[in-house]
Length: 283
Image (cartoon, rainbow, N blue to C red; front, side):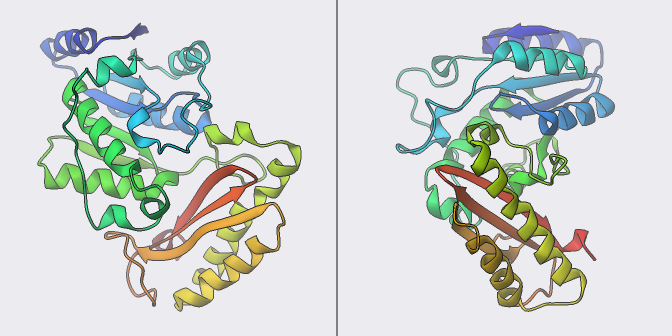
């Protein structure tokens, strides 16, 4: 496995693979890889002849008060995990490689990005769409792999690919959890012992909501109300949102009468964590 820093090196590697008639998968990440990322790499290795992992903490998707500087980074650790799971190339550019001086072109989206995480993180999805579209142009993959934990991001990227006629397939992969249920996240490393215990309210609320839906509850307010009450009982938890939305449009719905996403974002201390379930998965 090779680690490269420049766009030119990535393109040269992909060009050589294409000459051999090989297929290419891409796993876009911000590094500090964990078992969730490993599952994406596994899926790509299974589906494709070659797999590229991008390892780039994208400054464009962080707001001015967010955790860009403190976001965990460990390239050696990432490389060991990626190689162990069969990746062929890590693309680890510096910000200046992705955004040259005078950079002023962006990929933006309406509707899907104006709910959930888009409300509290107004610049986030413009940064996501811009960097992901750049990665697609650089790597030209046949398939790209994203985790369902970032369900809104997955929906946004699928919509962008459809809108802009990008010639690749987007693959969503299941949430990977710790043994106690907490969804794997690079930000889990921010939690102290008490916060780590308190963070279980997220997965507990997801289980509570999914059980209500499984048992036939279709009133969105009743489902989200029960979930909110459970989270609010934890002193270290502060809710950003608990919402039921149309799985395709990300717009809130009053009644679960179509494929829907129940998504939550909760601050545990200063750490913002997310989790979700799709109603189609619990029926």
